[in-house]
Image (tube, rainbow, N blue to C red; front, side):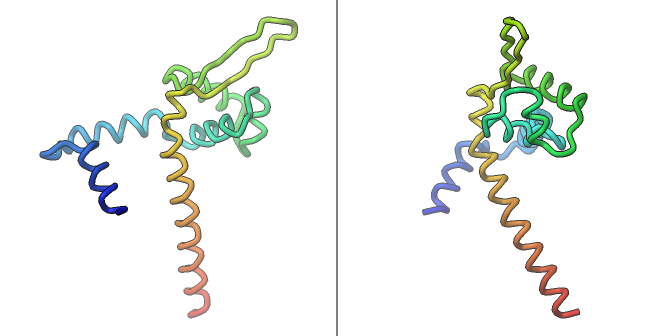
Length: 133
């Protein structure tokens, strides 16, 4: 059943005959929009309910104010998030993910799943190597 679903997805996504140039371009576009060290953690932070700049920053260890500001602007330009300014005193700025960003949610879940499996696999290999050494 899993193989049938995968075959269906392959048929939907990949052209026949395969167009490697188009596939590479699509991968590069995706990496351009969500690549780098900070974009996925920022999306994760927003999806966990952090809306204010400082809350987002506190939820991501190691990110600088300057880097967060730059990444948020770039993500807004790519329509992954919306910046809302409430002009009341004091001015309040909130960030929320767009429905376009949410369309990426299943991919992020799969990346988290894969990352957990990878970490477990590497630990097992490392543990086995240490026991044999």
